[in-house]
Amino acid sequence: APRRTAQRPNSGTASWEAEMLFEPLCAAKRVVCIGDLHGNLKEAQSLWKHLIRKFGDEVLKGETAIVFLGDLCDRGPSTRQLLDWIIMLQTEYPLVFCLSGNHDFGMASFLRCVPSNPSDLSSDLTLDGTRNLEWTTGFWPHNIDGGMHYQGRRWGGTNIFNADSTFRSYGVDGFELNLADKCDAFAGAVPEAHKQLLASMRWVVEVECARPDGPPIKITCVHAGLCPKKDAATQLQALRAKEWRHPVLHDDDDGTVSRIKALSGRMQDNHPELVQNDIVLVSGHHSLSRIDRHQLRAIVDEHGGKPGQPVQAIVFPEWLVLDSSGVEHAN
Image (tube, rainbow, N blue to C red):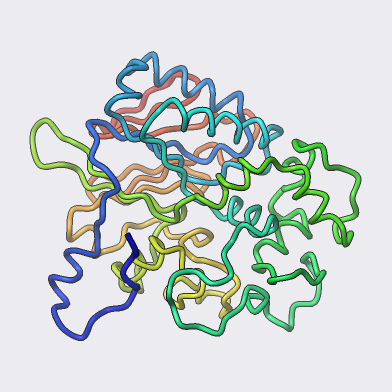
């Protein structure tokens, strides 16, 4: 069904916000939110084994929503193998959802998996228009049909994302950063199934989790979080529709349209409107682990792509943090 456009009406504000603040994709008895994996297949599979040992494979297959919080690619050595593993999980487990992180969005943009005309938003902003014309270096500069979002140009034209490991995982190596045919060479090496996975990644995942002693827990997952200074319902509607052109998603910190704040910003607190409506906000991205039940906020990214650090998951309704070394942290 088509999404409603991310605009606030002139009347009925209270009822509209109550409806638009939470649109669950499904209801589940348990929800597992897995932090940034960053091309680290070994740690991801170790975490998965501990989840199966803790809850049972049949439980994960039958009544559990599994949300990957984004940043599947870069830094670690095994992006290609990790995406193969995620695709396999999607065939075996019915409720697997993948969020896009800023790294995934950069990779998808470089592969031209980002639509040039999302939703029905009226805007003259183009993909190439997301680059500030005053910026002349630090990105892949070549012309391409349909244009390319600036984050894709940064991802493929510098090593700020540590994307070199991703290129190597697909057997693409030895290219100068700004070589004109780098984009086509990489696109030719990436399987179509991986492009489809990147293109299908959601920017927000909302799930209801059953609770034995009360109403369901409302869980909203966004890779970096929501901007507390902007209307929550409008942000969420734009994220559901992946409206990269919508000004509510632009990062005001740098005064440009080059970044999507919900994927790239540093927003460690829950949005006040979500707190008021008893909605838990779960993210990765921040290279730390922070669980605040009072403020209904969970950040699960102790790993951050750093070698030797365990990857983490938070499990609802228990608010249990489990990592790839098998350590559990009750909250």
